[in-house]
Amino acid sequence: MEDNIILGQIVRRGYNDDHKKVNYLAKVVDKKLKYISNHQKSKILRSDFKAEFGEIRFVRDGYLVHPADDIPIPTIVVSTRDSVKETLVNPKYKGIFSLKGVRWLIGNQYSSIFKGVLVTNKHIRNTKNSFVLDESVISLKTYKITTSEMMSPILIDEESVIFFNGLELPSSKEIYMPFSWEVTFAKALNKIFSKRKLKDQGILSKDKREVIQMFIKNLDEPLVIDYLAKELDISDTSELVKRFESFIKDKQDELDYKDEDSKIIIEIAQNNASLRKKVTSEIEKNWEQDNKIRIDKLKELQKKEDDIKSTIKVEEEKLDKIKEEILLKTNLSSSLDRRLQIAKENISDFRAQYLLLNGDSSAKQVNLEEKSLVGYSEGKIINLEKKVTRVANSTELIEKISNELVVNGISDEENALMLTGLLYTSLRSEKPLLLVGPMGQEIVNILSICLYNQTADVLDCSTNYNQLLLDTLKKRNSKILIVKYFWGNDWVNKIDEILNTGKAVFFVHPFKEELMMEAKSIYYYLTPLLMDLFVEKLVKVNYEQLPYFKRSSMYKDVKVSTEFLENNLELNLHPIVKENLQSLIEVDFDVNDELLEKLELSLAYLTENKNFIDVTDEEGLLKGIWYE
Image 1: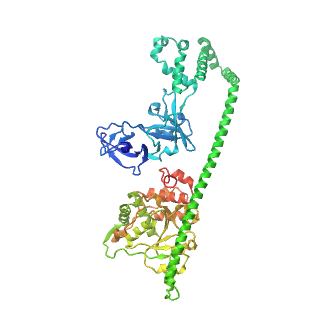
Image 2: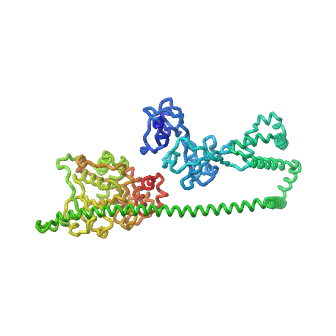
Image 3: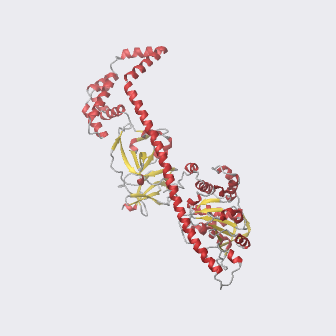
């Protein structure tokens, strides 16, 4: 039955408060929470479903969703180096602690282990600006989980939330005391001895000093010790007894002065500034002398703690650098292996084509132009009798082509619209794109077929540079050229000649890790785009089924204001790169903000601008694409 359990958030359906639905966040598979990729999926709740709006809870999936009351409360992981009390009052976490129907595991991570303190709704209360621990809290339980038991962040109410992926936390091994011993003892006494018990003893009818004296005199000490031992999970109570007796003695000492004497001393000190200063100074001096050993010990411990924290920080930085080096070398090794394999395949291909063109001495000679075409594939005309669809403007054209990406399962509607708009403006503005990652060549072919009823020409740069080949390319009537395997050979230095063949040029490359080792100034010429940010699935496209669009006589291009880039660009870019981006974001769509962000993230990733990625990537667009 647990395979039908879903974690979701209760939201309003329409404008009627009685109508609710559940937005799915994760599903339970083998007693573990798994992320649901389509997080917008939702279902209607039964009319008798009892829940508050905004509440996060488990439900049983079905045509009408049922409650799952037998499933525990979901647990949110809050990673911080601050104490529980400091974390609760921190405005940064106000949104997390405002979520309904959850509990929180507050702590931090050491290596692969996360250790935290469990806090529930009954443990905290909401003040005007933050959250605090409830006055009734004496102790809290701690738990340990592994990082593999923590889900990737999920966006809930604009907050990035990490859930523990289990339904039940492991058994608790330790107790956490959020307050000092003195405060803990006071809270325990307050819980054990209710106002009714004090009233029965006649204590509440006395003045304050007599109340305290009578309370201490009649105190049932074993009752308090047993209560605290149970609350704090202490088996050997000897140390606890000593601390409690010291606490009671301190409270008794506070009553040694008579009330009248105290009033006179306080009045004199308050009305005489020099005496007040002297008395305060003497009290501080005496206190420091009485507690010198403790103060020195505390300073020593504080210094040790600072030294340990400093050492941990240095070692963590070293570990992070080692991890980065390992990842880089691993990627480099994989990249070189792939390049070597591609080179081997290209050499074999070249040899076969060479023999085909040259033959032996008895074969007829092939003319020079045919030899020059090694490494070039001409675009294929799809269907001469295909029905033509007329479009009125660039917006309509882009929407229709983007629909083909959706129909073929390559992208969702929003990403397809962004990607098609970018390809179209690249073609029109003659600002070439570099498509890095999966499905680049297929997507350019979809654009080419929809616009010109033929696939794009292909230049394979794994062969040696050939000037005659470029001259031949210029004579061809095709409109779009795909350039692949561009890096690692003489073609890189001929980029100007490639861009001047009279065609719209799109560069494609399958592996983004390889490009991190290439010269960054290549991005003066090409604007990179990581296809990981747009492509949902690798598919085989049936080019024969694609439509063919032509512009009507009233066709219009729609442009976006030049102020858009100035107002929204986050990266500090060279004017050449900025001009390229401005030319590429020319069609006025609602998705232009997100498109610009993905263009910036692509540039930041390939130029290793980690600071920009850490600050900008709030939605975790990169997480799970490259690092998981």
